[in-house]
Image (cartoon, rainbow, N blue to C red; front, side, top):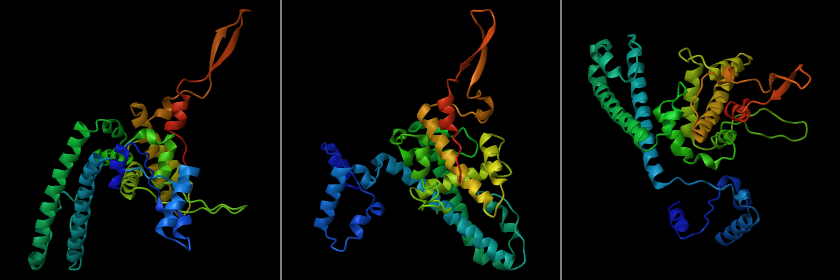
Length: 323
């Protein structure tokens, strides 16, 4: 990755191939550096898309994304320690009160048995320190959103999408014009099913899970909030609940993944067009064909069919997605 910016500065077109898509190279029984270079050159001359080029982030975006990933590492460490404390206390038969992770180190000490204080007090101190550091990262993330990436304010309009998810979305995709269509974001983030169709055989497979796993996890978390008990009423929630109501063993999980994909498409559309998110866009949008009465030359009323001006926006911003 390091030579890529330098080569671009020299005026070269740089193509970084996706190694997973180049089975022609790594399954070659006569593999060597010379043969690999020749194969890459032939594929690049024939059709660069055969290389599945990888988009590299700018150094600034990489540095800002490191802040979010560092915060995520601390959150996961805190969760691990909280689970350890709960499991240790539970083995003594003492229930611990429920509550948020941010206030765990303040609420839990009175409920811990005296015999466990020597073992768990250092862990509680570590949890408190992690909480303070996570809050410091939260302030950095909010400052980045306001000072460097104001477009995240548009992406935070849907309930369930916070500053971390919005900033991670902008930093991961970096350029909304990379995608010809908003719906292309779903496959990029691995939120579409695999496909292994041949003749009459077309099995239903799991999602590909390609692309950035961290952003995919954030979008799934946002989708779970929208479909959860505290999710606000909106088109996204109604669509997800309708999908989950179809039944089946994994209907709820499929609905969450499908809603995460739909949310990824919607966020890209908001980012690209700069439009304000309308939680009830489907209810407010006109029908595909609007009939308006106008007088005819004969004096009788005739119907003039006028397509709505935002029909294209409706089809791309809220496209139906299927798990």
